[in-house]
Every structure is written in structure tokens, then in C-alpha cells.
Length: 350
Image 1 (cartoon, rainbow, N blue to C red):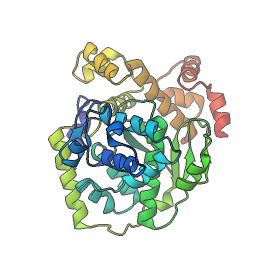
Image 2: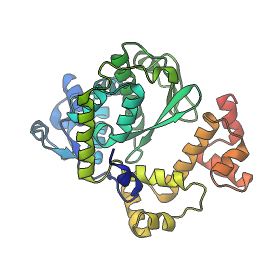
Image 3: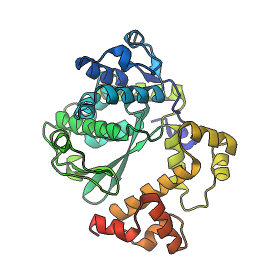
Image 4: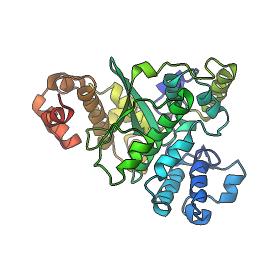
């Protein structure tokens, strides 16, 4: 791929008001689901800056913020417990031209997940998949690409269902996924059993889906196709035309994670992004967040991963995060997670 330069440029990245999401692709899947339940399209699209006639032209492009408004409207007008799961089942590979061909003709599940991450602006503009591996499992997390909001659970349930459904269709079997959610068990837990797995746990330190690595490289029906290679080239060209492959918050998170052991401040990070501190602060505020919040999220996610997947000690985790004072680390960890490290370890069974 020719996207290395884009990934290395931290100033690159789409924002919550960047208009690039094809309205007749991912948003149309949600619109069609609502229409199938007899939801009026005018009510569904209220506040989205979009009319159904615009979608039908095949030329309308909306921003992630508009897409999120559509999700919010759907949650309000179609509050059925199965809505996010049905949306997820319809998401991938979908009918999105070259981006769908990339998924349909992936060599195996691992490559499909890599494609979803590489082409997330086309296939998953609101959520970024984050993969970690240990000796036995793939652990797949999801990061909110344009900030967190009231639709967090809806988006997570939809993305997880989309991966499960895609893999099941291609491998023609129900894979032994394991799911953990960082929120309390809902009253409609049976929807999780039906659409995801009966191996589901709630009230966990983080939201993650895990799968034994043995299932990742099993060949898919169209593995090694010429059409798949052409589709990837087409997607690469689209990202190069836009000038970015990820969101502004994704770029910021990756920069913070790479530099996590170093002293990090708004001023230093702004310099790395080649913008003024005031400009960086405004861009963050536009996404409903702040520099300190993003730094805390990066530290929290890395710390929980190091405990949960790597099984490191308190001193090792503190060192990885650049803390020299273990007491200060424990205090910070409590602020990030609501738990002290010993409570997290007990929850994880370590």
C-alpha cells in the first residue's frame, strides 16, 4: 500500500464534520432497516442535513457527525433491542463498490480485519478496529473514531455483529467468539446470545471480542483473487485522493500511544501536529473532548491491555506508561478506570 506517508503525518485525518461518507453506502443500510420497520424517512433524517431524495442520487456525501445523528434518530424511533444487531448483520461486505469487493475477496478473516482497519474511512468511519494478539487469541477492541457519544453501545454492538456475521458467512460455521463488555448486563441479553455468542460477560474492564488464533487464517472462498487486488488499488487511490486514511482522533491516539513514555503536553503534541496549541484545543473541543481526556484514554487503554492480555505487574505497567512513581500511577489508574490495579486484577482473575 502507498499509505505510509499518510500514517506518518499526524496532521492528516478526517474530522467529525468532514463530508466524505457516501450516503448511499453505510448510512443507507441503516435507513433501509428503519424503512423496513415502517419508520418515516422525513422523521428519520431530521437534523441530519439530508433528504431521502439526496441519498437516491448516489452522489450525496455526509460527515461522521451527520451519520451519528442518523444513528441517534434510529435509536429513538426504532428502540427495539435487536436494532443494532440487525444493522450489524447487514453491514459487511455490503454494496459499497471496491470497498465491499476488498472484504468479499479477502484471503482469510485476519486479512479482512486488516482491510477494515486500513480502509476504515470507507468501511467503518465511526469505529476503528484495534487488534492485539497473545499466544492463543486475537483480541479485537474498537476505538471511537470521532469521539464518544450516547450511541456508544449501539455502535459497538453493530460492529461486533458485523464481524461475526461476515466471518460466519465466509467460513460457513459459527466461530467460538468470546465477548466482554464494559457496561452492565442489559435486560435483553438474549440478543447477545443470538447474534454474537453465548460466551458473553458484562461489567468487565474493557469491551473486547476474542477468538482463538487457529480460526484467523482459514482460506475464504475467493482467496487470492485478481479482483481483490484491483479493489485494494481502487481503495488506496481513493484514500490518496482524500489525503488521509484515518480520523484526526485516531492519528492523535496513535501519536500519544507511540510517545506514551515521554512527557506529553498540549504544547508538545500541537508542535508535532504542526498547529498552534489553541488550534489543537479547538479541534478537540469540536469533537467534544480535550487533550487531557484523550491522553487519559490512551493511557487507560494501554494499561488495561497490559494487565488483561500481557499479564504484566504493576511496576511493569507503570514503566510502560512512563511513570516513575508507583503511587502516582495507582492514583492515576484509579482516576482513569474507577479501580485500583489490585481490584482490576481481581476482576480479571489474575
